[in-house]
Image (cartoon, rainbow, N blue to C red; front, side, top):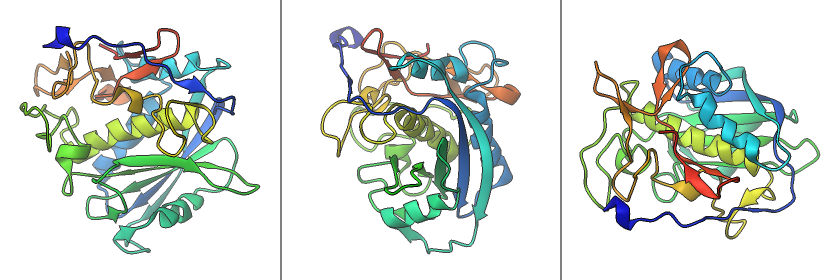
Length: 276
């Protein structure tokens, strides 16, 4: 079946806008309750993006693809402040405007990305229906980029934490074992990887994308469902397997972590390039 799905060249057009390059501070706003272990998985992933210590294939070798986008140069992400809002100050259902309000708590510094992470008991408008995360930028003089990702463990693991859960629709295959033992947070890593790649390559809606600016296909969303070579609908592709836990992964990170990251579009080949 994999042979039937020949990958067609895919073109993400560059719309002449700014990309995020150089040192970038990632501020985290934790909305709802996350355990210290869950927070450490996410922070370790972020610290893996530019770490050269992990064995290949690594999270940083995946992230290096962003250097191939116009202008070259690396986007070096550093974890900045972390804000905990464990008592749901805005309630357990959030609209887009409230995500932006929460993101603004990270500050308005240029060269930063404020990331809102919502816990498994928090519903967000559009979450599980047509998105697992999103990114954008505020309007106004102090322009900052922001992103949001939700924990789908309870609400829609088959939609936002696949392939660690049975898919909601389409070909049914057994779920893979999550590399950090947490279906919801390992799913968040996939979606965080997706929105961060989109943020640095299309931060202000005039960078790299295909299709309408209101619903663009970006660096990773253009490659949905591809994690390893030979991927096809319902099959994530050929991945590495942890001999002890049986978990599937394709990238090494800091502190001995293993992660599953999605394929990213490579501007030099015009194809989705999985790590393995």
